[in-house]
Image 1 (cartoon, rainbow, N blue to C red):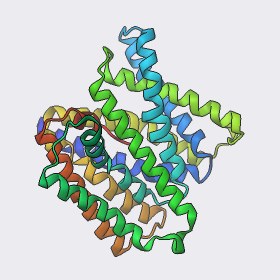
Image 2: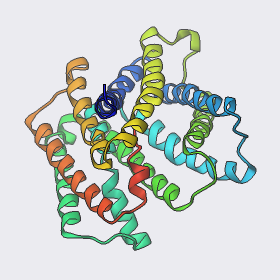
Image 3: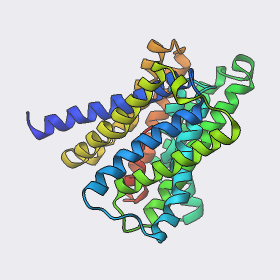
Image 4: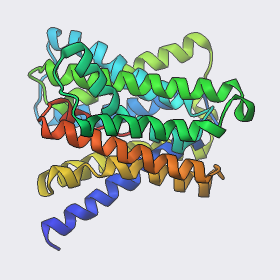
Length: 308
């Protein structure tokens, strides 16, 4: 099999696995507290990354690097992953995945109005309009009268998690440190795991490890081995052997996978509103992302590595 064919296979793995991790998380938190699940997942995932680099002879981060890693762990994993996982209790896995895919829109707004670094082109404006219109279209019938205040709370949590990922992506792109990106991810995962673990102990919102049901352990293993290891390796392989525009297509496939798998496994409703809204949102995100790439903004490279 040629490298290109292997790369397309790797792209399929990345798209499917990162899409299904939203559904897996939803299944996991139905049997255990959300922050406990996120903490265990990040602890195991972070330990794998850190162990790999330490075995390769990588030294421990310096004091200065740790000072940088701690707030990034809060932005990229405690908030973006922990709060997003908590929010899954109130909304469908498909909607959560779709909201997470909105990060290019928030990046554009933050970069434009705070850093004055992005030009708002007609293509960008159309993309922003379509992206927000799509979410509004989905939200139209899923209103307070249908799902109650918990639904709105879940959407708000997911939006907040998406925004913190965007802010973290911007900070990473503009404040480089002399530390391997994946080694850095491992430490951020570990720091976030400890933080969320202490939070669950303080609040008492946890169950003993020996009482965690097999289905939740299965979900955790799948997300760690599949989502944090194999999907990341596949993503790196696609970036090396495919054009960036093709390699980044997984970001538009993830929500579709989450919606379809969620409807099959979790019986989450899939209405015409959600289908049209999803298509509209993803087209908008694509247009915004494409306009960013044409401007060669460094945030795109960081944001393209997003995965639940």
